[in-house]
Image 1 (spheres, one colour):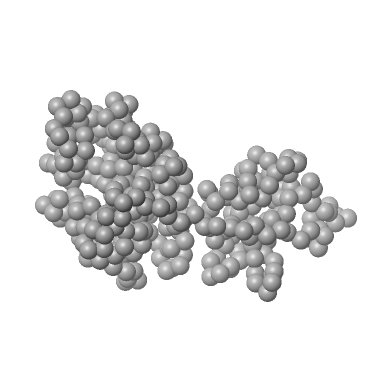
Image 2 (tube, rainbow, N blue to C red; image 1 turned 90 degrees about the horizontal axis):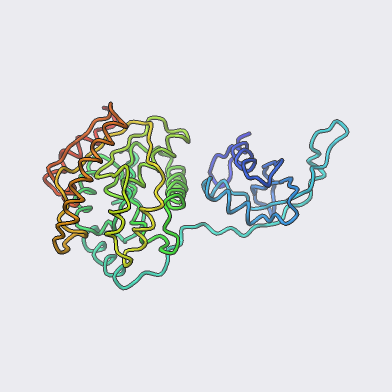
Length: 352
C-alpha cells in the first residue's frame, strides 16, 4: 500500500519488510493515523523481547531507510488483537506513543582549521562548506552526486565542480571529516549519504544520473551508487577516480594518529562492489609524500608504486569489461585542469 506523507510517496510494505529483519520483531504493521489533525506514520510491532524499546527500532530503521520513512509513533505488543476470523483487529490496536525523532544531519562543532577551510570555500566556491547543490539545482540538467574525500574547498575540487556544473546539477557532500569524527566508520557514513541523497531527490523530483568522487570519497561514492542502484536506479553511473579496491595495512601505517578519522574510515571500508555502469580513472605515477605538500618519503613512494600496479591489476581482473582511463598523474594530481577534459569525457552525457 502506498501513502503520501509530507509530500513523499511511501510504500508501507517497505517499512514492514525492513522491520521484520530485526531479530526481535516477529510481526509488524505500518500504517497512517491522523494524530493532532496531521497524518502520521505509525508502527505496531509484536515482540517477545520484554525490554524492546521503540528507540532501538527507530535507530535500526534509520540506518536502512530515509528519514521520511521513519514512523513517528510506535506501539510494541506481545501479540496482535485478532478478529474471530484470525485476522488483525485494527480497531483494537492500542494508541501508539510518540517518538521524538531527530534527523542525523546536524554537524559537529568545527575546529579552527575547519573554520578556515570553510572561509576558503566561501571565497573560492561562492557557497558554504556544507553538503548541498553547487550553484543551485537546475531541473533541465541531470544530477551528479560528488562525494568529497576532502573538503570541497580544496583547490583540486573547485575546477572539477566547475566542469561538472556545465552539464549537470551537482549535489555535493563534504568530507566525512565534517560529519562526525567520533564515529568515522564507512557503513554508517554511507547510510547517511543514502538517506540525505534520497531525501533531496524526492524533494526536487529527480533521479541520480551518476555518482563520482576522488580517493576515499570515490570509494564511499561507489558504495553509495551501489545502494542507489539496488533501491530502484538500475541505470545509475559511477565514475571512480583514484579509487583503491584494497588498502593494505602497510599503507594505513603511514596515516598518523593525527589523521585518525581518515584511518578509521579506510580501515572500516567494506569490500567495494558495483554492478552498474562503471567507469574508472586510475593514476600511473607514485605519490612522493605521505600527505599532499609533505616531505618526500622514499619508502612511501616505493609502496605507492607497488600499490598502483597491484590496484590496476585488481581493477582489471575484477571488472574486465569496464572502461578505464589511465592518467599520467600521481594520486593528488588527478583533478588538475589538464586532466579534466578526459574526466568529463569519462562522465559522458545523459544521451550517451
